[in-house]
Image (cartoon, rainbow, N blue to C red):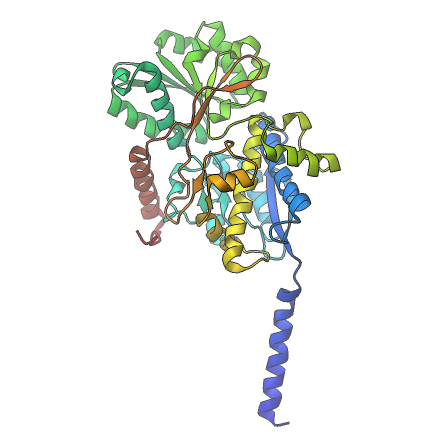
Length: 438
């Protein structure tokens, strides 16, 4: 054998040796689950991210994984603290044959802390109903997905709901709206769009911040009472929601004139308030209840096998639904990506491509057993929100009752604000926005 042929043979063997690990890699996709089972907001963390794990378990047990790829997941306790979230992310991001498929930073403050890291690592962030609102612009934030609905979308739908109750947008002129909020990053997200709408429709807004964790609110609600608002927007959460409802009742503020954002709208938040919660309204980007086929499948394939991650009586509750939908969008994003890259473990960047080319149609919702649980979703390179609707629910003293159909937000307000804010971020960070072909 000549030297040249010997060299080619050695190189060929080397190529085979290098390819072998890829060919023999396990058919597993690693999914980290950042959860907070401790701290003042533990009910939200355990419900949402426990349900997220339940849906991944369902896909494994019922379907054998995603197109044959088993989902391997691991919890990391964060106590809803950004520093612990960063540690959790760094510890888990490289696990599995291709690293983390995606990461769901549990908390808006944690999203802010991780944006640059996740972008550099090319791992997508999945945040349903929370996160940095202007990250809905995928041209500037390619790895951030504020799916279904962001905070500004929520707020335009809420003002539309109030206008409908008052008899039209023209009836909002001269009205007073109190914006009562626990003073943390996610609650402050609604400020810019609320001010914009006040200017458009002629109503007055006054902010009433509450120091976290929001257990002592007596002075704030006395100030709200003195303001004599026509409507109250309430951005509470966890025990802060319970405390706020009790104080509102104590100073005789009608709860059916209070509209909470979706983080005030869980059973765990309102039940401890007793009669003080009755009549309270909140927004939601999904429905609730146990009668959706997906929950029957979870009971059969996960809980009956002893593999559940949440107390069974919470299945179908608000936080539980939200966690299941986290799982739905991740898995559907993976399916979309596999149609292009093949049925194998995916890199974070490949999952990103899948998420931003994902469409969950009404037909697909029916196939997944979640028809009516969430609105249809269509994500694009430029739009990482997906254009979801908002529903409103009211607490009747024992359960949530839906009191609206899907209320459409106002993209003519939200999208220009998203793009302007994202463009400012791009200038500050020296980012050249992607060309999405539009």
